Length: 412
Ligand SMILES: Nc1ncnc2c1ncn2[C@@H]1O[C@H](COP(=O)(O)OP(=O)(O)O)[C@@H](O)[C@H]1O
Ligand SMILES: [Mg+2]
Image 1 (tube, rainbow, N blue to C red):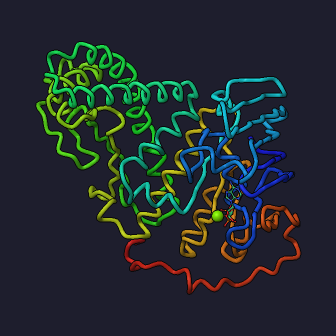
Image 2 (image 1 turned 60 degrees about the vertical axis):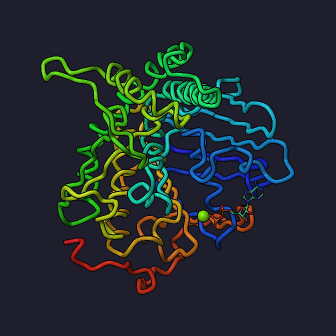
């Protein structure tokens, strides 16, 4: 798919903007703070119903305005769809498809995109929450229904934590808490589905991640993804939650729901002490390994970047593979400035076959020449100029200031 036209009203620093886009690569260029990220963020929002920069929607609505509107004409082969999202300062957001109201949650069915951003380094080096979010965003794009399951899980989790806290405050003994059992049932049902979905996704990402990593780096560092589950005693968030895990025989391994129930049983005393739910998908992680060692803590800056890029490329590959809408829109927000020349060129090669690629950069020279086909200039929330790149001098590339802090051996 590709975005053929994007209109923004009162979105971030755009009062009104309209941009025609085509298949192939487009570079949005402008000094820092002009609105490049804001623009591509709006496309990402249609695909994931969230921003990669903030958790709430308030910051997306232009200061002083009551609502922001993101409208995109999407081309799926020779079919065109008009999707529209209104983010309201007060009250629920609204969505339309071809000018008829639809549930907001339906939008990711029609808009698919994969965003690469400087923040992606945190997928490898950051906290487990960053990795959970990466997986969940991909799950929602592949099966929008799961967005509802995630929201329900969050709600049940919150209620359960509230109950644990009030029980703690009132000094209630664990066995007196019959209401907790009801919440446990809901938590286990919703949570087990999310855990199983993540496990399946992690397994499916393995091969595409390895292939993508090889396309970025000229060596086989054996990238691996391994699930860390809190219901099995995994300790992603650094709290000690050791407990006796559910017994399972190799003939009849315990199901996810059985293990989840056993974990909650074993942890109940500690949960009441702490007033928080200690096992479930909200405390899981996925361990990223290179050559058998955790990338977090062991991998160089460059290797970490390669892993992050490989995860995004693999996500794009999965979406392309199983989607009725064709390729996702690839958005590369300011990433080339983060990469050395080799990785820039390799990345440009790896994404060349996607239907639409949107790149943002402060400096055009950071962007590999094959991607500079069409240039859009952005200045303080306005699209000032769109040009074809034929008059641009391709410079010989002065990479000194962006060369990476790592030794060459990392890349073999
Ligand atoms: N809700 C908002 N209302 C008005 N301006 C905003 C809003 N959110 C962000 N901005 C402005 O947008 C600018 C940042 O835009 P951004 O797209 O991040 O820049 P860049 O071109 O560097 O990617 C800042 O000047 C910021 O103040
Ligand atoms: Mg930016």
